[in-house]
Image (tube, rainbow, N blue to C red):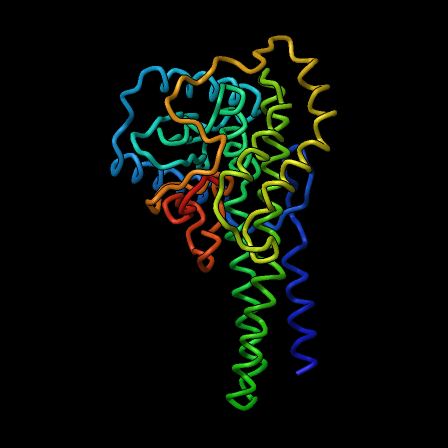
Length: 316
């Protein structure tokens, strides 16, 4: 048993070894998925979403999302992305960015933002997931975990059935809480960081980002402890962003064209106080961009499909 547990620990540590560096942060990533396959999956998912959900007819919202999105795309340094920004007619409070630059913002998200700069916080975070290829990285992690799991099964097959069961359960717990969830939280924090840089370079005041998350800490419903979650806590995200503000403000100050807070979002409903949403959204899980399961569910096998990453009450 000790030998097998040692194999588990050593094998899982190999999942953390990187073969690619994330943009801006430079974090080493494990990436075994070809980028072309990732782009293909993203394009397929995007077409499925558009075929199932009507496009918004709110011309003011369409213009604003495209304006903010194009400014972020201009500083994203991804000339091979075919950028598209769509507003989707739905009350879902979510947004997503799929590999290749396909961005969707649901109408229900807009009342959660006070101005263009806060909308830029959302879209830049989603774009960051795509730039850092978090979807491909997550699939690479899951594949590695599965391969190691096969080795664990092979080396434990001579054990008694009850012992095999305990070993497999131990591996499942170790891989989930030692690899899958920590990397999901890393992706969210990294997307926050990259997004802060993008919005500063695009000319939006990055100082709004920490307050955005602090406000949402009071809006969202009960959440699991961070150790059991796919996301850092909202207050921790705000703290991390505030620590990065000085560097972001340097970038913002150097930007030749500044938009500050941009135009206000004229909406009837605000979320400055706790609110509830009785529906279980089928949209993208904001902040996971993409790439992370519902905190109440088991990890999903398709990190490119935003419909399986829904949070029931609030964007994440």
